[in-house]
View 1: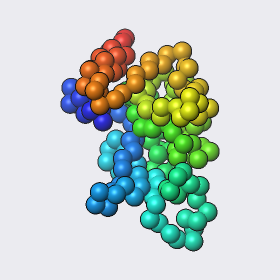
View 2 (view 1 turned 180 degrees about the horizontal axis):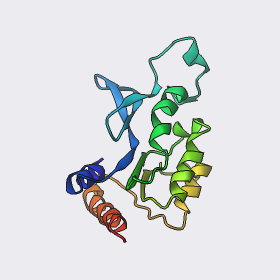
View 3 (view 1 turned 45 degrees about the vertical axis):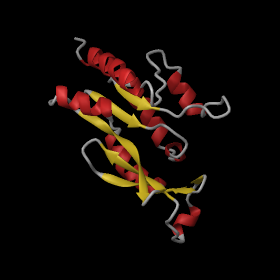
View 4 (view 1 turned 90 degrees about the horizontal axis):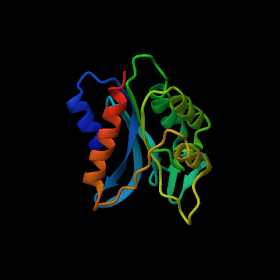
Length: 170
């Protein structure tokens, strides 16, 4: 989000499409995740508190039930490759998002479009990547950065610099 904010501020005419995920909290407890498009539309990604008959059929990750239909209705239009797009932002390509059968093909379409893509992926658990994530990380044009609390400001500058360079290529 910090890179996106800096890019938007320094390049106000930049056409950015995509989404990011953020926690949903009740007090100090995380109860789910929502998806927010770059232009501010919001929708549910996953919840530990929804208990409708329909939600019992949703896939789960830990204590969270993943609302694939809500995710797809919000995210899939954002991942359409259009000529006027300068940058795609996808936060994140992870286990919950990959329950959507149409999501990863759309991500690959974005990747193959040659439009710059800023995407986040989870750190592998037990040394094993999610197969789709490994494919993204091994893409010839990928630059990988591992963020933590100690390096996030300096890495933000590196990412911003690389994306700015890509955006200003003729």
